[in-house]
Image 1 (cartoon, rainbow, N blue to C red):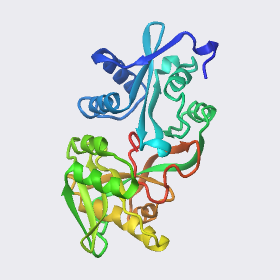
Image 2 (spheres, rainbow, N blue to C red):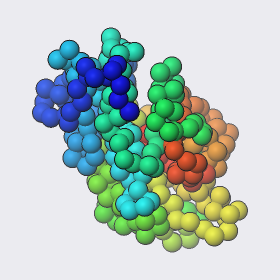
Image 3 (tube, one colour):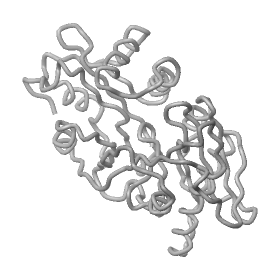
Length: 295
């Protein structure tokens, strides 16, 4: 999807500390709230090593960047756009379109979490995506969350967490769980119901985004029981956390069964993105606890 408006823009793989510095400059200019000293540079290196991280040059200067990560493999593979940001001075010049044309060439199953920026929704729609539901950034005091009866939570290694998720979902997220576990205050967690592992994920992200990074939950064939287990797994993990200031967060689809429970407990929505994908249901809005950057 290229045209004359983007022919003067060169998109290439990000490489070296100079590109890293340019990406951080754009992230600051677009008012992203990140730990720019440690977590964000590590995140960019993770994307470069395990996905695709590109920069767009306009007039010989880096004017934007984007990245994708593939989740799953084979016919079920999903290509997630993790980042797309353009220097505000280059808005409307075709930089975003040029980046997407490079990153989304032959992947039919595409997802992203779109910001509410006026340019985002029309751009992603042109690449075959529709908006389905809001992803809520829910935060509050973990001391207001009661651990459901019968549940226990323990710290676990990233490899154990990844193995459980693989057995439940078929997705190998081992690289991401190792990355999340290396965050400040990061660790893997396993939540069990009556001694049986039911949920596995990663927590961390202090001090800016501390909370659940990602949580996978074993399926239950009974829809009513599954809904209760999904809700209670989130509450159990959050009640287990011990942040210094008592506060944590989770990113939940609006239809997620834990959303109502947390809002009832006094948690609040600080912001939200729109989940967009090429077809409904690529992510399960009633089960997923997600990282907006890595899903």
